[in-house]
Image (cartoon, rainbow, N blue to C red; front, side, top):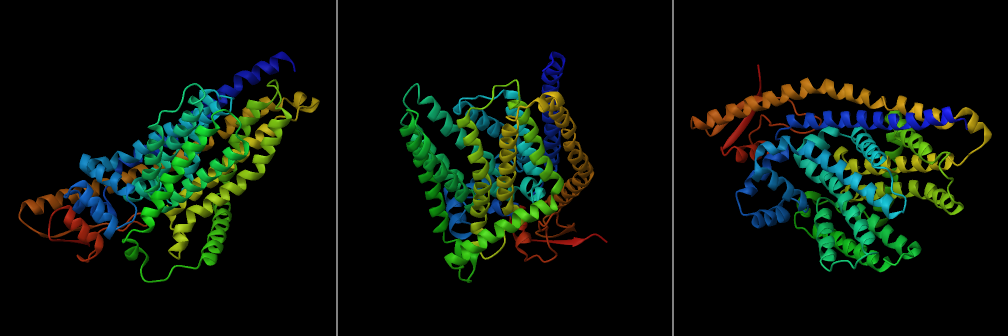
Length: 484
């Protein structure tokens, strides 16, 4: 290959990577900023009655009477204890923690594989994964800006990479020194708490750990195989215990009602059917995001593995080909696992409960695209040299990097709407405190519409949202009526 072309390819790809990371991170910063306009909604009010009690009493009452999920309650309670204003901080905090966690996981995974990636590549892939996952979220408002849903369906996905990275780091470190005995109960405890956020989370963790245990038994030959087994089994036990604790909760009787659960065969068939329908629906309704979810990792990995980088060995090509077939199946099975609890409750998952499935789909597509890009880069003919496909792919990546700006424009347009609603909410809260200071205990306040499927205060004082809000503001009743 002529030197001038090789030089332009070398300089253009880093620029494309920088552009991709910058624009993706820009969109995430807007999503985080929109979170500053988050306020209490629906279930958020209900936690106040619990925090008046000591923590363990509150946790037990919630577990036995309200919800089998215990870790999300811990996060909500901690948020309220620190201060109600933290509800506007959590979205940005969770996005930041997610980026850090995924970047750490990718670093440990690449190091564990023996081919540590450049940190710029890791950061770019991290931004892309978080961007595409949130962009295609079935209901981004509920996932990010409604604390009760964030604590149940988003927070566990934020913390999950930390568990995986910790296990990989411990296995890798065991090659130089024995694993400390306290690492095992710590991994167990972390898995237990992580699984307690929700049933879909627990089932996904259990599925991934079962696969990891099987893969370790089948393929791992390095001297730390025993350590890997032990860590994975301790983690698996913690997630299983979390699922069992949720399954035996007395609160399930209130949540599931009197309808009998479906039979095992019906549960499995519906879960697989719903999972397949979900994938098809995602492709139909989100064709452009799906296209770029595949295109950008493909272009990145084509550049990473194209000439003059040494070609993959036959063993590496075989492994990549096997993974190419396995990843779609694994992604589908994780979607099915995340749908199982909703199907057990005899329904197709609501929007917020589909986010775990959406993340599994996005992750699967990105890994599949990365494998395709790596294998395509092994085609090294005279034509690829003449056309300089590496330079062309780098240019295409720079063009594709502009796609997040479309999402940024849509998110920026939401700022005035979110801001106006937050100001109205603040005004109403000030009104409530003023009326309460005047000695009134049966309040009438102005009403505004619910948002993105989340219920607002009702005109009926006995509505559950109103009752929780009345406890939150320490009054007898609250009614919300429309402004005339």
